[in-house]
Image 1 (spheres, protein in one colour):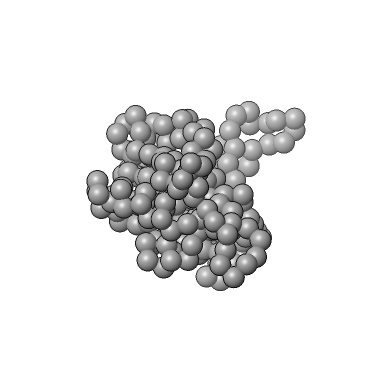
Image 2 (cartoon, rainbow, N blue to C red):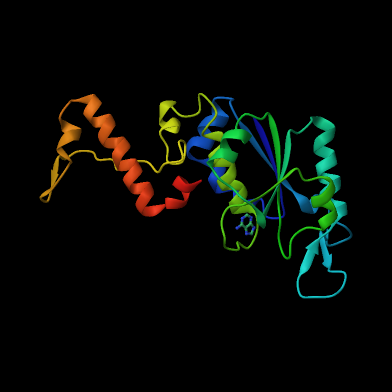
Length: 225
Ligand code: ADE
């Protein structure tokens, strides 16, 4: 898989992709992430990428020209299965979206800033619009990093133990059950007995019940879906 991210703040994305799972995925040749500075396509001496809104109102809007030039430059090299735009008014991103995107080959992600991007880019170039939650970030970069992480970790071979992605919260519309590690007794707080019983059928049953209980308590909306 290849992910191309278009942004005016590439520095914001250096950290997430230089470490952890994403770095390993790149080293194994399973996924590659390329970050592109939109300002290279900016206009004039100041490489401007935004302008005032038609109709008036506070806040600048990212212009069509630089964005579409950058998108089309990338499209000259390869075709893209999806062009994502990160925006608080997009579809609320979830695990099912991550599963679907993880099966694609080439993905482009556009990070918005200021008041967002010109609607014509959204209408004619963007294929998916996602929000990572009902709050507003200063730009789409952190959202792009979140989405990239959630996609890349699902690609077979990225995680050492492939089953660990399958038992994540949300994979079966349930939250994950509680987990424990050594010591068995920490300051009088004991690990549930069943987990040290060696009875794997009982353990599986306990985990299923706990997952259901946790989901009912914390995210009943997942069950009603
Ligand atoms: N850009 C600003 N806020 C965002 C959000 N909540 N999700 C995705 N992109 C955003």
